[in-house]
Image 1 (cartoon, helix red, strand yellow):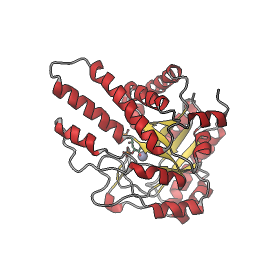
Image 2 (cartoon, protein in one colour):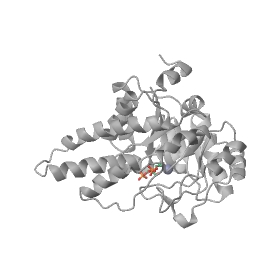
Image 3 (cartoon, helix red, strand yellow):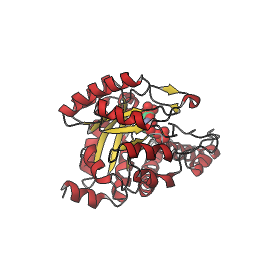
Length: 317
Ligand code: G3H
Ligand code: 13P
Ligand code: ZN
């Protein structure tokens, strides 16, 4: 059942984080639903601008509606990831989204507020909630490229002013993560001190952590052993998710890890079975492996096993 992102956050805040997983095709969608039902976890499906234009924006929305029928036990929200003004308005009007993210973090503070406010006013009129971003993650985002050297963590004082003026419903904070498979070069990690300060200034306000793939070293090893070249890939320690959740992080974004599972399955499959060419053979393995990956990730987020609580609190039978 599709629910509002806001409802999921109300139940989760301070207790656990909801996994927000990006999908681009039906195999990812099936694996995601299966993994979340198996682990009894609520979840958020994220669709990026790139995912919307991979085939046709209607395609993923239709796949999600079908999955909703196939998995009647699933409880989830549908979210636009890293939208701009145009894509936010499009998703708000589509009727298929629970929430949108307006990412104007590359703009000045004032411009970020102005653009976010526009989206908030339109979205709220339709009962859709809005995620905004303040601060800049290192690495490469969908339409924003920020070098690691220029990465700027979120300023807690500015965060308070930002949410008051923009009216956003949750805030993506830069606390040391970056998108992609190469997050850290040395011993850097999450800046819990910054997160603590933000929570002090914004008690009860849902925070979002982007760039949260853990880039499992065993996946990287297997990909490289099967012909890949991902030297130095490194991610976030997933054992830190629960601490982040206690500090107000209610949504944790994971995309890269799913891509790694896909790459490992397909590289190993075609390495070991060079005579095969039926795409459904590796596809079936991927759906099963991705479901297992999702279920394991939900354990780390603390969302596994929370479906009965969510259903009770939201009055879902
Ligand atoms: O944060 C970005 C997400 O991982 C989406 O990536 O723009 O390649 O779909 P994408
Ligand atoms: P990763 O690249 O760490 O998976 O981050 C995904 C993300 O933040 C999507 O918005
Ligand atoms: Zn992101």
